[in-house]
Image (cartoon, rainbow over all chains, first blue to last red; front, side, top):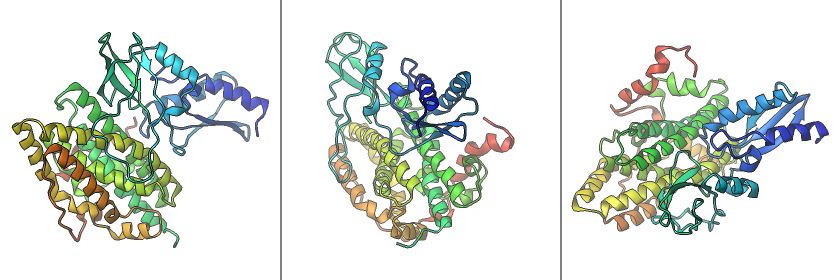
Length: 168
Length: 255
């Protein structure tokens, strides 16, 4: 049941920022599943971007702390694995903030035909624009970056390296 | 479909969880040893993904067997004969060619199992598999691209990759032997059938071999899966000593 109380609590949680990508709120990142009130206690459900996302522990603390500050002590934070998070859930606002911070936002997740997942020996040509100079001439350096959700690319026009949030 | 008995589910979660935990440890050993900084980061990321899968699975084992034991208990306070991982996961890899071969085989096999598990009747296994499929797809591509780069590179790199494949191949047949727990869970629609992963495995390895100019050996079927019964190679004891040493030195430590 949604009450004005839970709507206010939801607004508090939605404004909490990601510890690794502090320019994004949890709402921007699309990991906030639900905020409910059960027996006077706020129960927040979030989903990890990756199974082992180390930021989850910090997010959990940040959420309970923010709620406590706003007058909702003792909140419970649950994590849900299903449905699996997709980079498509990053909001338009989130994408704009990422680009502004020099991190290329993800493109749309590529649909996959049914059947076994095909091997990809040559990386897909993603059309990633350099967030620094705007050139479309960029290349993949590594699919694994500083965190599980980011890959490393470089711009062949301005020659600057930059990060890209992976499509997943 | 007969209902799944919980002890079977707990044992199965340990199998899948231990595969991920032990392989993750072997990958972590490569921190500071990889050929390039980008590969340091890649291997650490892959190890972290597997560790995340292991944590979920070991936690699930503790709820399925009714003991309520934590992931830390299973990781740090079990003896060698209580680990249920396949031998491939514990194999020592001292050369980058060996590591890439082990990762290619492991990720290809695990991805085939995980795809089956997305349809599991167990809600948690299905949810974890759906997530892990996305992660392990990246792992398989990473290993396959390195196998091609080395295999189809210089004569020297080709030989190293070929030797790497020869190093891991004796441990491949075990991957496709269904333990009785796996058989029962596959029949119940909860688990994946390892034998059912073989066609996809051979197809993918064939594609990599063709692109890498490497001859992929045939799989000679085997009757037993010793790792699944807690019988391990001599590489396992030193691995566990390192993995469990700190936790066992101070049993009340928290982190």
